Image (cartoon, rainbow, N blue to C red):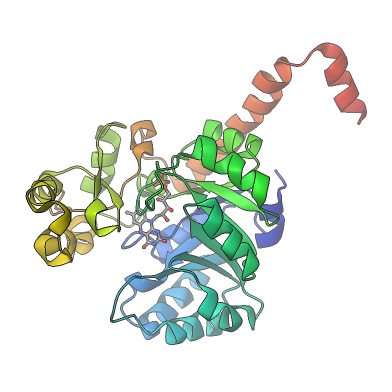
Length: 334
Ligand SMILES: Cc1cc2nc3c(=O)[nH]c(=O)nc-3n(C[C@H](O)[C@H](O)[C@H](O)COP(=O)(O)O)c2cc1C
């Protein structure tokens, strides 16, 4: 399947694995790229730029295919040394960067200097337009369903994607709630040139996380995510667990007076506990509503091959079947 995204990134299938804290290591990124998608290493999971350089080198050892690095611009006072992270990305020969969080404007010259393609992930049309204006090559449009930070507009993809299609000139991929061939075909029909998946890729054999996490994803339903940190305007969609229930209790008690320090134990240092140690009640970790569509733990290649084969069946079988014979004949001639 050829789209503006497969052409831009030199990949076989229009499927991207979004950056994920403590999940997006070289093993997963390489598996996705080897399967014909675009794998992405999560930059800030590597505690220093030197460690990121090492992770990039490890990924080069595992795949000859293109892969990218995610750089999340956090709303923190003690910002990580982004210029050094960007230097590691450039020196590692990376040609694709997924940015997220705050606008990457300040870092665009450094990223573009070595011809890096930038795909910015954002949750609104206005931020997508801003990304286009500052020279991003593509956008990953993240709907309210998504795991992670859906922003504060609460706009689901059935509206957000067609709105992005109405406004954007650069290509975009659909992100949030994407799991299978139905997601891909729906996204394409709403104007997207591919899809970005987070949560779905965690439940794969190669995802380098504790098996408890994968089993929890298979067991959970679409009703099992919670929104936390709304009062801080830093909303995150997470999988419910005992730590998250405690967090929500504190949020109810504190109301609008909530401070980040009040929920420190439920949000700080949680990812290694969950992803490495498998402590499923440790606190808040991102998970999308799409968890309700995850019923198995395939290899990444099985997952991607299945999506592409079923997308073909949906388009040729189901959708083409709705057209009358004369129309199909004219399409074949064209
Ligand atoms: C466990 C987890 C960790 C994530 N960490 C990050 C991150 O560090 N940076 C980022 O830009 N997005 C992060 N995301 C968001 C994903 O890249 C992606 O945009 C999102 O998962 C898409 O929604 P979906 O989960 O419904 O597929 C994370 C998502 C999950 C599930």
